[in-house]
Image (cartoon, rainbow over all chains, first blue to last red; front, side):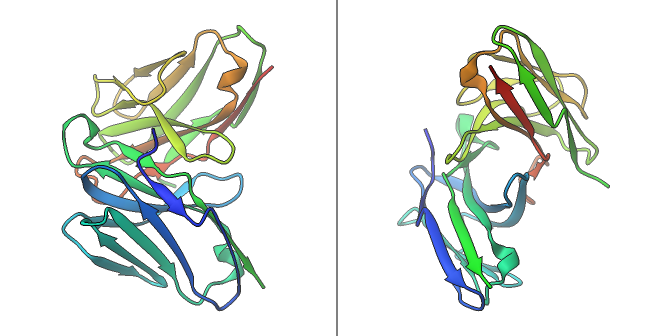
Length: 114
Length: 113
């Protein structure tokens, strides 16, 4: 079963606006990662946040992690048309048989209109 | 360019045929993975190899087999293809400590008719 669930399933915004996507997960994690997938392409790693971190930045991306609520959010600031893609959160379990394996959510489809 | 290379990019099979999807990485990663992605869904893990010489089942292993040929190569075999295996297949690799995320190949789009 999917570990992560993402919200919203689809998001449509204008260029220049901020986009926020949320992810919830079920079990304890080692880390949480966000990926982007352009239509018909492979996934590209965006950012990784460890379970002992609360916030991380990379360029226009800001990721937060709340382990008490088992949730994360991805904020893309000043969006561009080129940000149009599907965004997936994925978790690596804290230990045991889930260690090292990424479990993906179903993704958020982001459309940025010029 | 460094990365994960998958072949073929597209394939059409008839029900019952067999085929092997190839994957190679040149980043000296220890771990490799096979995922499938179906429309409107995230990726589901089929098999993975934590290190050379080991393979383990993921979430949806039925109907598939894998071989970790060496540190670079990890192949996925469909012995008797079924329409339910129509999907896009992604290979990925990662370092031991999971510090930098996975690197994905560009995918193989497989249709079973």
